[in-house]
Image (cartoon, rainbow, N blue to C red; front, side, top):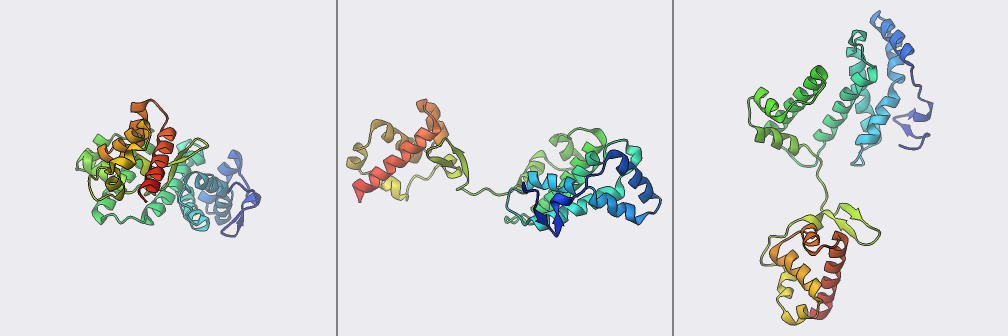
Length: 258
Protein backbone atom coordinates (compact mmCIF):
# COMPACT_ATOMS: atom_id res chain seq x y z
CA UNK A 1 0.00 0.00 0.00
CA UNK A 2 2.84 2.41 0.76
CA UNK A 3 4.41 1.81 -2.67
CA UNK A 4 3.23 4.42 -5.17
CA UNK A 5 3.39 1.86 -7.99
CA UNK A 6 0.93 -0.57 -6.44
CA UNK A 7 -1.77 -1.89 -8.77
CA UNK A 8 -5.12 -2.76 -7.14
CA UNK A 9 -8.03 -4.20 -9.11
CA UNK A 10 -6.24 -3.17 -12.30
CA UNK A 11 -5.91 0.44 -11.11
CA UNK A 12 -2.43 1.98 -11.02
CA UNK A 13 -2.56 3.95 -7.78
CA UNK A 14 0.32 6.23 -8.81
CA UNK A 15 -1.71 7.52 -11.75
CA UNK A 16 -4.88 8.37 -9.83
CA UNK A 17 -6.08 11.93 -10.20
CA UNK A 18 -7.08 14.09 -7.23
CA UNK A 19 -9.81 16.64 -7.89
CA UNK A 20 -9.73 20.17 -6.54
CA UNK A 21 -12.69 21.56 -4.61
CA UNK A 22 -13.68 23.67 -7.61
CA UNK A 23 -13.52 20.67 -9.97
CA UNK A 24 -15.63 18.61 -7.54
CA UNK A 25 -18.30 21.30 -7.32
CA UNK A 26 -18.49 21.67 -11.10
CA UNK A 27 -18.70 17.90 -11.67
CA UNK A 28 -21.48 17.50 -9.09
CA UNK A 29 -23.47 20.25 -10.82
CA UNK A 30 -23.02 18.51 -14.17
CA UNK A 31 -23.96 15.11 -12.69
CA UNK A 32 -27.16 16.49 -11.21
CA UNK A 33 -27.97 17.88 -14.63
CA UNK A 34 -27.74 14.35 -16.07
CA UNK A 35 -24.13 14.20 -17.26
CA UNK A 36 -23.10 10.55 -16.82
CA UNK A 37 -19.46 11.29 -17.65
CA UNK A 38 -19.32 13.69 -14.71
CA UNK A 39 -20.30 10.86 -12.36
CA UNK A 40 -17.49 8.67 -13.72
CA UNK A 41 -15.02 11.52 -13.32
CA UNK A 42 -16.13 11.98 -9.70
CA UNK A 43 -15.56 8.28 -9.01
CA UNK A 44 -12.09 8.13 -10.60
CA UNK A 45 -11.15 11.43 -8.98
CA UNK A 46 -11.86 10.11 -5.47
CA UNK A 47 -10.30 6.65 -5.61
CA UNK A 48 -7.34 7.86 -3.56
CA UNK A 49 -9.82 8.61 -0.78
CA UNK A 50 -10.75 4.91 -0.78
CA UNK A 51 -7.08 3.93 -0.64
CA UNK A 52 -6.38 6.24 2.28
CA UNK A 53 -9.16 4.53 4.25
CA UNK A 54 -7.92 1.04 3.39
CA UNK A 55 -4.49 1.89 4.81
CA UNK A 56 -6.14 2.42 8.19
CA UNK A 57 -8.49 -0.58 8.32
CA UNK A 58 -6.63 -3.40 6.57
CA UNK A 59 -5.35 -5.13 9.72
CA UNK A 60 -6.28 -8.75 8.89
CA UNK A 61 -4.32 -9.19 5.66
CA UNK A 62 -7.54 -9.19 3.64
CA UNK A 63 -7.36 -9.29 -0.15
CA UNK A 64 -6.76 -5.67 -1.15
CA UNK A 65 -8.58 -6.08 -4.45
CA UNK A 66 -11.73 -7.16 -2.61
CA UNK A 67 -11.47 -4.38 -0.04
CA UNK A 68 -10.84 -1.79 -2.74
CA UNK A 69 -13.94 -2.85 -4.66
CA UNK A 70 -16.03 -2.78 -1.48
CA UNK A 71 -14.69 0.68 -0.67
CA UNK A 72 -15.62 1.83 -4.18
CA UNK A 73 -19.21 0.74 -3.53
CA UNK A 74 -19.28 3.07 -0.55
CA UNK A 75 -17.75 5.83 -2.68
CA UNK A 76 -20.42 5.46 -5.36
CA UNK A 77 -23.16 5.56 -2.73
CA UNK A 78 -21.65 8.74 -1.29
CA UNK A 79 -21.45 10.39 -4.73
CA UNK A 80 -25.05 9.45 -5.61
CA UNK A 81 -26.38 10.81 -2.30
CA UNK A 82 -24.20 13.89 -1.84
CA UNK A 83 -25.93 17.25 -1.99
CA UNK A 84 -23.98 20.48 -2.48
CA UNK A 85 -26.52 22.14 -0.19
CA UNK A 86 -24.92 20.26 2.73
CA UNK A 87 -22.14 22.86 2.65
CA UNK A 88 -19.57 20.29 3.81
CA UNK A 89 -16.54 18.86 2.07
CA UNK A 90 -17.34 15.76 0.04
CA UNK A 91 -14.64 13.79 1.85
CA UNK A 92 -16.28 14.59 5.21
CA UNK A 93 -19.53 13.12 3.92
CA UNK A 94 -17.97 10.19 2.02
CA UNK A 95 -15.52 8.78 4.60
CA UNK A 96 -18.20 7.37 6.97
CA UNK A 97 -20.02 5.73 4.04
CA UNK A 98 -16.88 4.17 2.56
CA UNK A 99 -15.67 3.07 5.99
CA UNK A 100 -19.11 1.64 6.76
CA UNK A 101 -19.09 -0.53 3.63
CA UNK A 102 -15.58 -1.84 4.37
CA UNK A 103 -16.40 -2.59 8.01
CA UNK A 104 -19.61 -4.40 7.03
CA UNK A 105 -17.60 -6.54 4.63
CA UNK A 106 -15.03 -7.36 7.32
CA UNK A 107 -17.77 -8.21 9.85
CA UNK A 108 -19.59 -10.47 7.41
CA UNK A 109 -16.35 -12.34 6.74
CA UNK A 110 -15.50 -12.75 10.42
CA UNK A 111 -14.25 -16.27 11.25
CA UNK A 112 -16.32 -16.36 14.45
CA UNK A 113 -19.99 -17.24 14.00
CA UNK A 114 -22.40 -14.80 15.60
CA UNK A 115 -26.12 -15.49 15.94
CA UNK A 116 -28.39 -13.75 13.42
CA UNK A 117 -30.32 -11.88 16.12
CA UNK A 118 -27.13 -10.55 17.71
CA UNK A 119 -25.71 -9.54 14.34
CA UNK A 120 -28.97 -7.80 13.36
CA UNK A 121 -28.97 -5.86 16.63
CA UNK A 122 -25.36 -4.82 16.06
CA UNK A 123 -26.16 -3.60 12.55
CA UNK A 124 -29.15 -1.61 13.79
CA UNK A 125 -27.01 -0.06 16.51
CA UNK A 126 -24.25 0.84 14.06
CA UNK A 127 -26.72 2.33 11.61
CA UNK A 128 -28.30 4.40 14.38
CA UNK A 129 -24.85 5.53 15.57
CA UNK A 130 -23.96 6.62 12.03
CA UNK A 131 -27.26 8.47 11.50
CA UNK A 132 -26.99 10.19 14.88
CA UNK A 133 -23.43 11.31 14.19
CA UNK A 134 -24.34 12.66 10.74
CA UNK A 135 -27.23 14.63 12.24
CA UNK A 136 -25.78 15.77 15.58
CA UNK A 137 -22.04 15.71 14.91
CA UNK A 138 -21.37 13.67 18.08
CA UNK A 139 -21.47 10.07 19.26
CA UNK A 140 -24.71 8.69 20.70
CA UNK A 141 -24.48 7.21 24.19
CA UNK A 142 -24.93 3.49 24.86
CA UNK A 143 -27.90 4.35 27.09
CA UNK A 144 -29.65 6.23 24.27
CA UNK A 145 -28.84 3.42 21.83
CA UNK A 146 -30.44 0.86 24.12
CA UNK A 147 -33.48 3.07 24.68
CA UNK A 148 -33.97 3.76 20.96
CA UNK A 149 -33.71 0.07 20.07
CA UNK A 150 -35.88 -1.01 23.01
CA UNK A 151 -33.26 -3.31 24.50
CA UNK A 152 -30.75 -3.41 27.36
CA UNK A 153 -27.33 -1.79 27.58
CA UNK A 154 -25.83 -5.25 28.07
CA UNK A 155 -27.36 -6.52 24.82
CA UNK A 156 -26.06 -3.50 22.90
CA UNK A 157 -22.54 -3.87 24.26
CA UNK A 158 -22.56 -7.64 23.70
CA UNK A 159 -23.80 -7.23 20.10
CA UNK A 160 -21.17 -4.61 19.21
CA UNK A 161 -18.36 -6.53 20.91
CA UNK A 162 -19.33 -9.73 19.05
CA UNK A 163 -18.42 -8.12 15.74
CA UNK A 164 -14.85 -7.29 16.71
CA UNK A 165 -12.02 -9.18 15.05
CA UNK A 166 -10.66 -12.17 17.00
CA UNK A 167 -7.07 -11.93 18.24
CA UNK A 168 -4.67 -14.86 18.27
CA UNK A 169 -3.32 -15.96 21.65
CA UNK A 170 0.10 -15.80 20.04
CA UNK A 171 -0.29 -12.18 18.91
CA UNK A 172 2.80 -10.21 20.07
CA UNK A 173 1.84 -7.20 22.21
CA UNK A 174 5.20 -6.00 23.50
CA UNK A 175 8.90 -6.31 22.72
CA UNK A 176 11.66 -4.41 24.48
CA UNK A 177 14.39 -5.81 22.27
CA UNK A 178 14.54 -9.03 24.30
CA UNK A 179 11.82 -11.58 24.90
CA UNK A 180 8.52 -10.94 23.16
CA UNK A 181 5.36 -10.84 25.30
CA UNK A 182 2.30 -12.46 23.72
CA UNK A 183 -1.43 -12.28 24.44
CA UNK A 184 -1.37 -15.63 26.23
CA UNK A 185 1.09 -14.18 28.74
CA UNK A 186 -1.75 -11.88 29.90
CA UNK A 187 -4.34 -14.62 30.36
CA UNK A 188 -5.06 -15.53 33.96
CA UNK A 189 -4.50 -19.25 34.59
CA UNK A 190 -7.24 -20.46 36.95
CA UNK A 191 -6.66 -24.14 36.27
CA UNK A 192 -5.74 -25.91 39.51
CA UNK A 193 -5.08 -29.49 38.41
CA UNK A 194 -4.16 -31.50 35.35
CA UNK A 195 -1.39 -29.22 34.09
CA UNK A 196 1.90 -30.95 33.44
CA UNK A 197 3.79 -27.91 34.67
CA UNK A 198 1.79 -27.77 37.90
CA UNK A 199 2.45 -31.45 38.54
CA UNK A 200 6.16 -30.89 38.11
CA UNK A 201 6.08 -27.84 40.36
CA UNK A 202 4.92 -30.20 43.12
CA UNK A 203 8.36 -31.82 43.05
CA UNK A 204 10.01 -29.87 45.84
CA UNK A 205 13.58 -30.80 44.92
CA UNK A 206 13.23 -29.35 41.44
CA UNK A 207 11.56 -26.20 42.68
CA UNK A 208 14.14 -25.63 45.40
CA UNK A 209 16.87 -25.48 42.78
CA UNK A 210 15.36 -22.26 41.43
CA UNK A 211 16.10 -18.79 42.73
CA UNK A 212 13.69 -17.23 45.22
CA UNK A 213 12.43 -14.79 42.59
CA UNK A 214 11.78 -17.58 40.08
CA UNK A 215 9.91 -19.63 42.69
CA UNK A 216 7.69 -16.65 43.53
CA UNK A 217 6.90 -15.99 39.87
CA UNK A 218 6.00 -19.60 39.10
CA UNK A 219 3.89 -19.89 42.24
CA UNK A 220 1.92 -16.75 41.47
CA UNK A 221 1.57 -17.56 37.74
CA UNK A 222 0.54 -21.22 37.92
CA UNK A 223 -0.81 -21.72 41.43
CA UNK A 224 -2.43 -18.40 42.29
CA UNK A 225 -3.22 -17.59 38.65
CA UNK A 226 -1.90 -14.03 38.33
CA UNK A 227 -0.96 -12.43 35.02
CA UNK A 228 2.58 -11.34 34.27
CA UNK A 229 1.48 -7.72 34.52
CA UNK A 230 0.12 -8.26 38.05
CA UNK A 231 3.29 -10.04 39.15
CA UNK A 232 5.48 -7.30 37.67
CA UNK A 233 3.53 -4.69 39.60
CA UNK A 234 3.80 -6.65 42.86
CA UNK A 235 7.54 -7.24 42.46
CA UNK A 236 8.26 -3.74 41.11
CA UNK A 237 9.99 -5.02 37.98
CA UNK A 238 9.11 -4.87 34.28
CA UNK A 239 6.77 -7.35 32.63
CA UNK A 240 9.58 -8.27 30.24
CA UNK A 241 11.70 -9.30 33.25
CA UNK A 242 8.86 -11.44 34.61
CA UNK A 243 8.47 -13.12 31.24
CA UNK A 244 12.20 -13.79 30.98
CA UNK A 245 12.45 -15.19 34.54
CA UNK A 246 9.38 -17.38 34.03
CA UNK A 247 10.73 -18.89 30.81
CA UNK A 248 14.15 -19.51 32.32
CA UNK A 249 12.60 -21.17 35.39
CA UNK A 250 10.43 -23.49 33.30
CA UNK A 251 13.41 -24.38 31.13
CA UNK A 252 15.44 -25.24 34.25
CA UNK A 253 12.59 -27.35 35.69
CA UNK A 254 12.31 -29.35 32.48
CA UNK A 255 16.02 -30.12 32.61
CA UNK A 256 15.87 -31.11 36.28
CA UNK A 257 12.75 -33.27 35.96
CA UNK A 258 13.66 -34.89 32.66
